[in-house]
Image: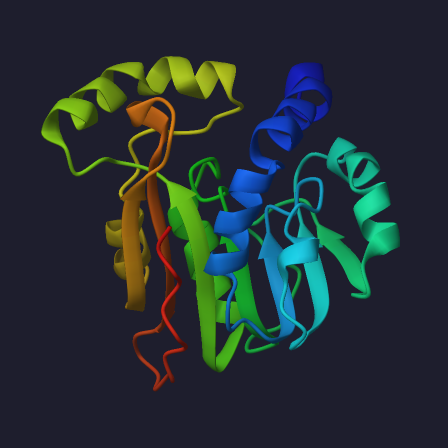
Length: 217
């Protein structure tokens, strides 16, 4: 990773996605998560204050080491033990069936090989575990979707590989997950970057108990 991606971009993301409005979305998307949680895209630790009491430990994965520096105050303030286990969500250093649940917030949009990452998430989830996700992606409005497709290349250059036009429902299901609950909604701001996917999914080949649905703003 270059200087911009490793040093500048994490600070911008911390400002844009670390505010109260985004915190409200995080808290709702993480309702019901518990146990040992693998967080893919830990960033600057903005999810820490929004995890419910049922979470025991967080295993953190993020390619930008600078995020750990930005997370210092949040790490000092949290009750949760946080273990940094790797940089690459596409190759997780974990055994099969080893985590209770997985959290991904505004991360699947950026991982280069998202199919590999979802495959890894599915591999490390214990039977009955869930993927909790909150992502921005392809709009259901055709006009907005066309704009997203046109701007996607520029978005990737400016935002460290982040895509505007990923259909997260389709990606998650193609990876072998079954969607439990899903909320799609538009947040304030540019429509091209504000269409949200919030929900939970479990391994479609195994029985899973669906938690309560995320609350829609």
